[in-house]
Length: 308
Image 1 (tube, one colour):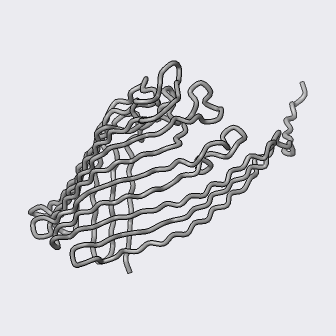
Image 2: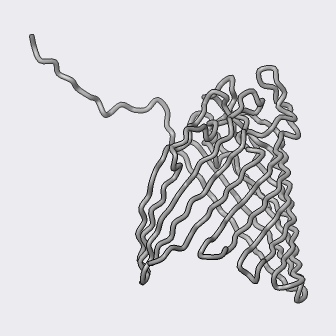
Image 3: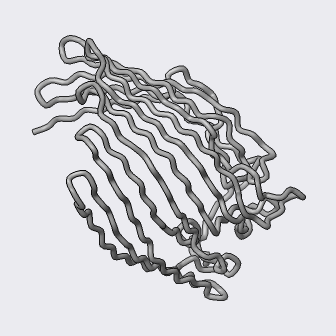
């Protein structure tokens, strides 16, 4: 019996070329204007151009340009209080997320309009800071993976509206304790859509992988002899995996911990993530109901720093 001989041909030409080019350019101007001791205004504008060409049959290409203005007003009645309101607009070219093809070159850039009011207050003689913000986001020209053809071109979904609230509190407590915490409420849904998937209309459905409630609390304690220890809890509420809200990803809670040693410019820190090795679903890939992504298992990092 003869010895088999295996050969490999490395000179096989691809069926199609995947080469292409992208050209990106931007310019912006922004200014913070002091109207008085208590009032300040922020105004700015940005211009972007994003061009992509792919050298395949049909030569698909797209050239997007956009102006993105922003404006804000800040009121500071005292040195410990600040109140603000802002409006801004931004855009994200469709070709920034995937290569241009003959099928998806028709998609206009995704545009986001943001409106926000909020406050920042220093408490307890500057030992603590609390913030609160109410905001409204409107995203247009959203696209997603087609559930009926996951490997094919994306499909337009419509307009997504998000009303939200964010609260944070950080502060130095007594006896070396420090706390950092936050909470977010998001009411995100597709406010305008003509898309119907598997007989279900997308309009009025909740946005994908967007929890209604999320929160975190982190506590650290300064110990003797240059040591610090801490732990924190992260909570993410239930989310929908797909635009038609047929699959719900359950909420989950994970815990992290750390310990550090600092002396004379040297810093050594050990972080442990997902301390109890919680199994959970972190997200859904491309908005597909059956393409779920598990969360990271327990892991650890050891970091050393030295400041000259």
